[in-house]
Image (tube, rainbow, N blue to C red; front, side, top):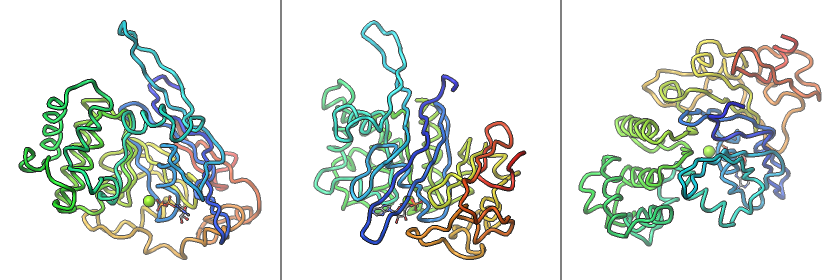
Length: 340
Ligand SMILES: Nc1ncnc2c1ncn2[C@@H]1O[C@H](COP(=O)(O)OP(=O)(O)O)[C@@H](O)[C@H]1O
Ligand SMILES: [Mg+2]
C-alpha cells in the first residue's frame, strides 16, 4: 500500500441483531482513502453508507456490532524533537469509548451529519462547542480559541460571526446550523472528514459554497474526505474515487472518470442512467426496475440479481460474487467480469 494512505478499510462487517432478524448492514466492504483525497460514496437509501461511516468512527452501538474487518488508520505523530513518524492503528481494536478512540474521533477525524441539530448540543452556544473542540486538541487560551472560532464561522460564511458565536443552535436557521456544524468539524483541521449527506437540507447555492469551503480546507490541511451523497453531480465535482454500495456491499470502486464514463456493474449503469438533470435533485433510481430487497431476507447470490437486466444463471446461486479488477484502481463485484 502506498505510503500516502490515510485510511484502509478491509472486509468491514457490521450487523444489526434485531428481533425481526439479522440485518447485514455492511457486509464485506473494503476501500482506502489517500491523504488529501476525496472518496465519494453513493447508493440507494438503506444500502449501508451511514453504517460504514459510523463503523470507521468505531461508533456502532447495540443492537449493532462490527463483527469483522479492519479499519487501519495511518496515524502520524510528531515527537518533541519534531520528528514525524507513522503508526498503523486498527481502530476496531480500540475500546470505542477509550481515551485514544475519543481523541481520534473528536480531533483527528470529524463527521458532518445530514441533520445538523443532531450533532450540536442544544444547551450550549455555538461558541462554547467550537471553543471546547479547539481546546481539546490544541494548547491555546480560551480567548485565542474564541478568536479562532470566530474565524471558523467567518470561513463557513456565517454572517456576523462575532454575534453568532454566542447564539444557541435553536436561534439559527437550518442552513446556519449546518454551517456551524461544518465549522465545528473543521475547527480541529481533521485528517479525515466524513460528510454524510451534509448538504441535503441546504439550497443549491449554499451547497456550492460549502463544497468550495471543503475544497479549500482540503488544500490547506491535506484533509481526506469521505463524502456520502445521493447527488451524483456533487460526486462528479469533488471526488477522486467513487464507491458504489448496494445492500451492504461495495459493488464497484473506481476513479471518478472511469465510474462516470465506463461503469461496469449493472447497478452502477442503472444508477447513472437514472440521473435526470444535474440541477434537479431527485431520488435516484426512480427509473430502475424493482425495489430494494427486504434487508432481513436478502436474495441468495448477488443481492442485485432480481433487478439486474444482465443477470446470468450463476448470479442467483449461493456462490461468492467475485471481486474483479478491471483496470487500475477499478474493481467490480459481478459475475459478468469473472475470468477477465
Ligand atoms: N441503529 C440501527 N438499528 C437497526 N438497524 C439499523 C440501524 N442503523 C442502520 N440500520 C440498518 O442498516 C441498514 C443500512 O443503513 P444505513 O447505513 O443507515 O443506510 P444508508 O446510510 O445507506 O441510507 C439499513 O437496513 C438500516 O435499516
Ligand atoms: Mg445514511
